[in-house]
Length: 557
Image 1 (cartoon, one colour):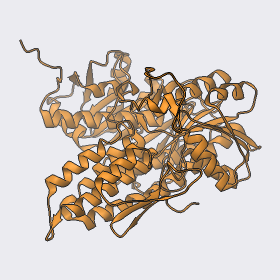
Image 2 (cartoon, one colour):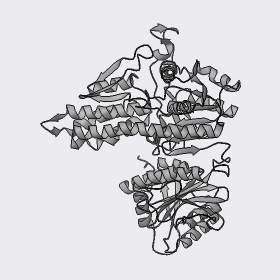
Image 3 (tube, rainbow, N blue to C red):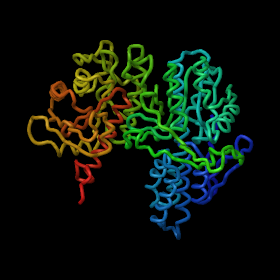
Image 4 (cartoon, rainbow, N blue to C red):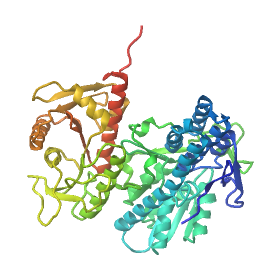
């Protein structure tokens, strides 16, 4: 679609100074770490993916500056990387990108640059995939007619490096001839919508109208909006979404009017190590941004100001989160009240989501070779990964539909269901789950194996005091007793043990260990089941590294 808004040129990062838009598209050349940090903090570069990539280039610059006679001063570069990562606290992409390139510092500036250029190229591919998935979803939810859409802040190539996220979806829909009108929130107080989004939409030839933020709800009430599309700066393990201030208000209005509210973001924006949005540090910006504009004061001198740069939208107000891996459904006419697929959704669509998730977990080493399996419930059936196939190469066709009641495959299918199907159906028969994930993540599998006592009984591992427990949706997030099941050669026996245990323990958590056989998690949606697997693995890594299952602070007195 568009050329990258971030490029590397002879030792410096080149970009558009977004402070000059829309009147002046001036080039910004950043050759020092201080210049990169200043560009990020002053919003010359803004948008979660864009500041992440800029931060990675900052590490390149730092490595070049602290290399003498081919030797890298690693401590100095790491200190500079810390400064860069702290430039803006709310968006997770900045810290994520800096962390990604840190591992190459010891190999020299060229290695850090190569990793950063890979990240840059990846961003464009990721954004296009997410934008296409989002466009597909909008048309499934709203029909194939001319769409009236609303967006907030700026989520285009200026906020990423190419294509964009929510604006990327608008571009895809426009190319399909499906956009009648886009209402653009001006996005107070810095007017990213008025200055940047309107500029990008005009550049792309997409019909649009600019409005004040406080008019958006009235536009919905008067039938001028079919769907709302926004980006995100951080998405926590439970699905809460941090985005530009004003997003929460839009979500409330969209829910009231029954309008789909869609979040489009790369997987790198998902922070599964953070349990809920309550933990997000919301950046507070300068009072001058509110008390005046363009150098003109609009408030009495000394007026106190509340100026949060972001707000947090609770997960239950989000219709769907869309990433390059597919769509996370939460509240849609195509899904029931728990976000589970209904018969109006096709197995092919769910197969696509399953395959994308499997490939992602394969790349992490959690589903090595043919190991592990994923399923999604569709009414009285479960769609599960097929047996004997590499999880790194799955497509939507590599799934099998089985009856939840007795695990019998539905007729007319060429694939065989995974050997662990009985584990999945045991969960579905005893819980109102929409998806199940079974993986062999290393820390969780190892901890389960060492925690189990010899014998054929179900053990439990009690974990207390860790913040990540909030990611499991527990009634009491302070503590959890995770069941540890014996690993029988006959998988059906494992499934029978799980079903009996879950029936006898209705308050059991949505996570379990199987000794030497990995972990199983479930949730209302595939994304939630995956998030819980990620939380459990992160939790087990903390326990392994600290040697403590109880992280409750000790009283000192």
